[in-house]
Length: 149
Image 1: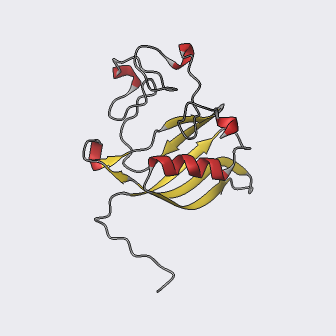
Image 2 (image 1 turned 180 degrees about the vertical axis):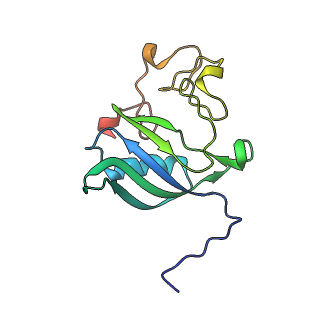
């Protein structure tokens, strides 16, 4: 029984995340580092293959969400859509709240969004397309880009 971990039904902050990256050359370490910024803990990485044994570009992780009373369900949720450098990624998991692709906020969809927020620097008033700031998409610092992180 030492090889098993019992998780009670009341532990609602544990999720199995399916993460799809369109860049097959993006390292597991970079993706894991991104998840660790948005969750309490990251365990059990597994690459998902198709029926012929070819990797689909999807990874599966077991994560523990950060507790936050101000967010939906009492937890901070990782972004459902994100970019690491030029690589676009999507996340899917159980009880995932609605996610706006325009402002990257949880709780509403793009069709209901009323804000203009840059998803690169996080400031209001402009979009990513017109943003002049250089921000690392992995760590969020503004003194370097993803390639130098």
